[in-house]
Length: 606
Image 1 (tube, rainbow, N blue to C red):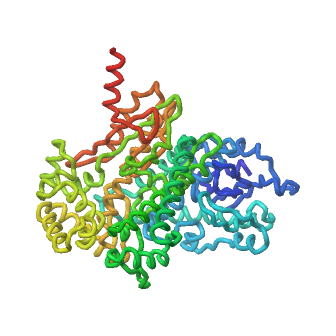
Image 2 (image 1 turned 180 degrees about the vertical axis):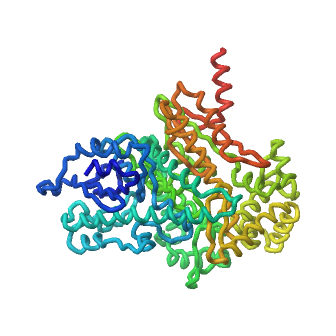
Image 3 (image 1 turned 30 degrees about the vertical axis):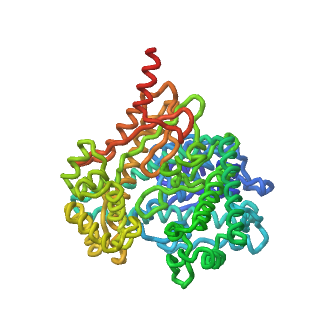
């Protein structure tokens, strides 16, 4: 059987596991491999130890390392990094084969689908996924579990306890669907590529980039990022106490126990903050809205209490408490980066969602969230962050040379826009955001807190002073409306079957183009390229920022990483630049790398 599998150029591989957390103790109990014609089920499940098909776990690395380590093989998977993590836990350390993830292919084929799970995609090729989960729940093969940070429990099916007569056909069915779906998607993408305009970049290079990105993200997830447990616990306790104090303040002012619901807040605000009632906005169902953007417009002290409570509650639960629940026994957190998580191609993340750990106002907090993440004792934490990359890419696309000239001379992007318009930088930055994300005059008025008439005038001024940007935006929207498809600079495809949503096309084009810039930088500066064989490693990707642990003896790598990231985009008019920061303390205590290095040299001279 192994001889047959090792002779195949392409295979599908899937694992059945005890749970979804490979870095916190869950293990695989079977491996399913599918070829073009057959499926093979390898049973390593101790629950079925007495069955004649049972195999010892010690064979996993011996048998499957030659397959996954073969650079001439292509391995099809669905949610590839998860299977790679489970296999790594069994001693498989080399993944030299080309690994193709169906979820990523499906995003490239149709970025507008609602779901990309294997069962959601099986229908594309006429397959149906077996209902084993439902059978397990109906027949008592489950237990109560709660997700980290959530009090509510749910029934968790125990697949490893499923009888072999059910789990084997179920697993083999997944293997067959994975293989056939990959072949079908690759064929469809190739057909489209063959019919593309000669000047249009090939989607094949996007597929190749995504395959390399899968491996780099696996390396990052496997390594994890070190958590300062003591700081995190102290921060959680502080925010929980702050939330409790705010609940007491709310009750002292109103006589009502605080409940963050529209029912409670409606009654309280009508009685104690009547001036804010005029600012209420109703939901589609006619109820009063208390969303964050609505509460932000309220003026009463009571509204401030609600805002601060939400902030404290979120910081305690979403961040600090969640980190404590997700940390492994080595003190590390392993975020799950999803390549197919967004329509634009930008990465999303979960467990925890490090994409929401931005700099911003967090620096003003008593316990900045980024200080939770620290470097190992022998390394520095280095952050490489592209400067205003979305706006630079937009200006380069548009060839808006008057603004570009200022930016090249060292003027901040938003200040350059402000100079062109004769407005302050904050207004220019907000207008840039609105244009890029498809916002209209009403949204602009809300963001700038100005009358609608004034917002319309500002928008018209923007269009007048930056005509090439305006023409670019209009041309992108028009193409999305008429052709129902646009392509970014690298060849990624965005489909707009409903022209009502064509206004989103500029954002897709720019944000997705930046996502590919980041993926190229991540791969070229990563653990399989620049950092291969070093003691340094890449650990995080947060929007336009890459985070590394650079060994104290390998600081010469830092300018090389910066150069790779800055040159990832082949600009025509405006190059990309990246800021570099470093810290031996935490992600929240970084300082400019050049200034730090100059200070270090001065100290050494003394």
